[in-house]
Amino acid sequence: MSELAQPNRAGGATETERDPARRKAAGRTYSQAIAAPRLLSIPAFIGLALLVLPILGLIARADWPNLPTAISSTESQSALWLSLQTSTIATVLCAVVGVPLAVLISRSRSWLAGILRTLTTLPLVMPPLVGGMALLYLLGRNGLVGQYLDLWFGVRIPFTTAAVVLAQSFVALPFLVISVEGALRTAGTRFETVAATLGAGRWRVFAQITLPLVLPGLASGIILCFARALGEFGATALFAGNAPGITQTMPLAIYTAFNGAGVGQDSAVALSLLLIFVAIIILLMLRSWRRSPGGLN
Amino acid sequence: MSLKVDVRANRGKFELEAEFELGNGEVLAILGPNGAGKSTLLNALAGLASVSQGSIRLGSRVLTDVASGVAIPTAKRRIGLLGQEPLLFPHLSVAKNIEFALRSSNKSKTDALRLTSEWLDRVHLTEFSKRKPAQLSGGQQQKVAIARALATEPEVLLLDEPMARLDVDTASILRELLREQLRESGTSAILVTHDVNDALELAHRIAIIEEGKITAIGEASALFLQSSAGFASSIFGPNLVEGEIDDDGNVRFVEGATFAPSFGRNSSLRPGQKVLIGFEPRIVTVDPESAPSRK
Image 1 (spheres, chains in turn yellow, brown):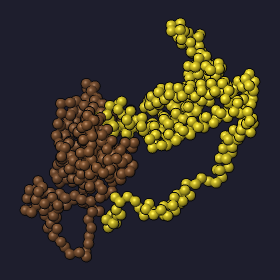
Image 2 (tube, each protein chain N blue to C red; image 1 turned 180 degrees about the vertical axis):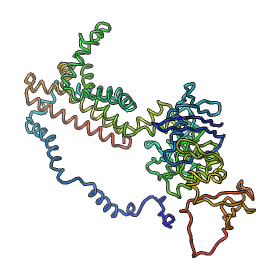
Image 3 (cartoon, chains in turn orange, yellow; image 1 turned 60 degrees about the vertical axis):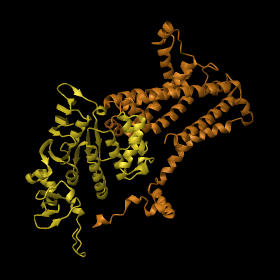
Image 4 (cartoon, chains in turn purple, yellow; image 1 turned 120 degrees about the vertical axis):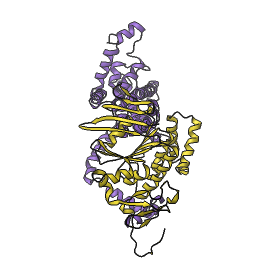
């Protein structure tokens, strides 16, 4: 009977797996099987060009001999440093509040989850300038909450470094929440249910099961969140202003230079290239950390 | 510690109505067609689904009582669950999976480590302790899941078709392991299954559930001898042979042939006792070439 003649599966590797030549052949068959239609490569390359060509334009425009001077000026150095600091703090802040928010959304009833998700993604469809205005009318000296912060605690947030961090968090948080929430939904609740039947309390389940399971999604979210915070301009300009050393981040320094108030367009291009270079380095670092065995999957 | 169940649970228009008792260390199999309410019942017992009426008591503890509004959360019920899929935590090694269960049931770190290696030994997977679940075969994963579920010393273990996803050979190995470990630990269990072999080999009693109601409950032999119609006979009929235990501890079929199963004289079967043998037709081979052998 056929059932009795079953190959021994306990051995694990099949013929194909053992033989390198065959494995290679099998791999080729596989990649052919999933190859995309060739015509798709045309719009794909147009898309890529749309993303990459402007940067080439920037590189072509750069005044390379004077580049080192432009980017080593005190102003650009302090703008870069401020950008890195505020973006990092904003990303940590987003992770601390964003992960719980993502958990809340993913565990809510569907109608409530829909409302929460819409509210969370609101900053994505808002021009950042509007976000900055909204923050100002909330936390400004005459704002809804700001007047009491000033009156009771003497705290004034606008036009401080804290305002930069808040503006960055406001625009970057949705990226982290969406990313983590997607991971939570993909992971489902089956492992959490099993953990509960084993007697695990909610905190143990969250810390040891839920969180590790969504780490890849969290890593993507952190990358997107950091990138968005680093590039943030509009909300910062309105809510935090443009004070060198305090609120003048790289995007603001670039804008200032480009408008001629600073050193001129050459300097703006140089700062832009520096920002792009730093951003690429950091994104590469985050990605390698995510893929490393000790990292996040 | 006995489990007393008397509940009604609704899922959409479907209503489940179940009343039964599970003795200490007893294994009760629940057989029934798809959609009969088996999963609803298990979910109600595990606290994963709400109950519309009635109560669930475990020894002196009330787990669910609709009248007084009691609904103990899943994590505090001490009711384990083992399903079709092993659902091992993919980011934890085999050993860490079991350790997690032990730590969750309030064992100290030292005890958890010691018991983890004991359990790995019991399911013969010590050499795989550091592997991730994905590096194990389906059968090995399910063995770990059995160890993980039993390590927490649940008062009742709910088994939801635990062998359904395994091939015939692996399923029978797992069935034997499960029987051994359930007996050794004296854990009461409720086994939901389609597979009559599961029910016969693991359970002391069998309940038949149809359209949300338990239509028959009792010991296997009694149940199948009396139920000439309905679900029980439909799943059992063709593969069931009636016989009697002879002096050697073998089964003498009514038709005259003798079956010498491996349990020999050591089983609890007494000469003269009427028995039923159930089997899957696929395990029978007919080989006209070889001479008849006595064993």
